[in-house]
Amino acid sequence: MKATRDFEDIIGGALMIAGGTWFALYSLNYNMGTLRRMGPAYFPLSIGVLVVAFGLIILVPALFRAGTLPRPEWRPFLAICIAVLGFALLVDRFGLIPAVLLLTALAAFAERNPSLRLTLVLAASLAAIAVLVFTMGLGIPIPAYRWSL
Image (cartoon, rainbow, N blue to C red; front, side, top):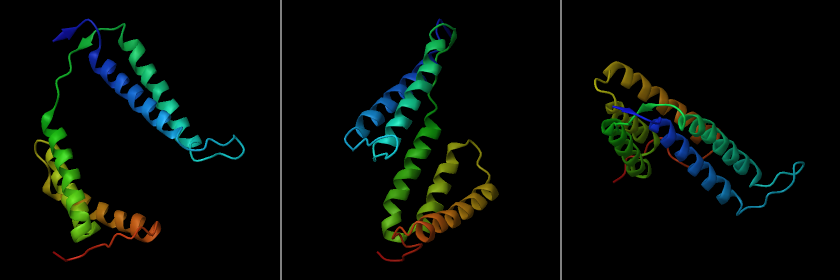
């Protein structure tokens, strides 16, 4: 269905503006510092302002062109939400590797016909990368696996 305005980009730009504004305003709770001695608020504020600017770059032209009405895709939305919830519920009890494997397997259902081989390779790769980066590299105390109930 044709619309008089490009509502997909209007909604996307407005969400970026809202998110960037929240991020920038929340960063003001911390010390800004100066350009030479940046405080903890300096980088998040800069990113928030950039996100708002990009949101405006997307939103303003969309007000002056025709487009289609957005049709939400519920399958990917629900698959990703359930995957993140599954990760959150598993990571403390069973460890990082099983949680990442479940996250990847559930997120694969965002596609209509997920490839089993691709999902297995992706799950194994992401689990290895997660352990290397978070447990070994950053030293975050998340066990790779834990088999406790």
